[in-house]
Image (cartoon, rainbow, N blue to C red; front, side, top):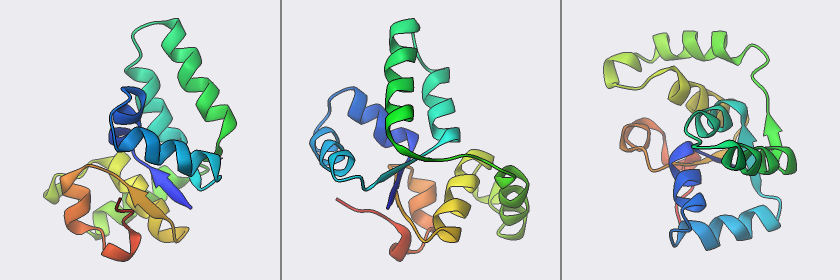
Length: 125
């Protein structure tokens, strides 16, 4: 399964290639898992109620991960790995933590994450 970061979703919603067609294929093959923090970020950036409804439709149609205590675990994980010193905030630490814990691939455009996440956990198109 591929956990898709906010940066990729933004490019997808803008219709930018290759993100759009690749993500459509992954969604159609049920290979995408959505995380509530990512969709929370997407909703925060919506410009109107139509965009909110659009994002929520995707959230409801995908396999998803709810936090269920992940914030605490990821905070500890971030502390142990000194993420803050590397410029990686809690949201990105949550994604890194979930990726490793669930043995997922993370599709992100975030250079800070790509720099510290082992290649086995990175989805690369």
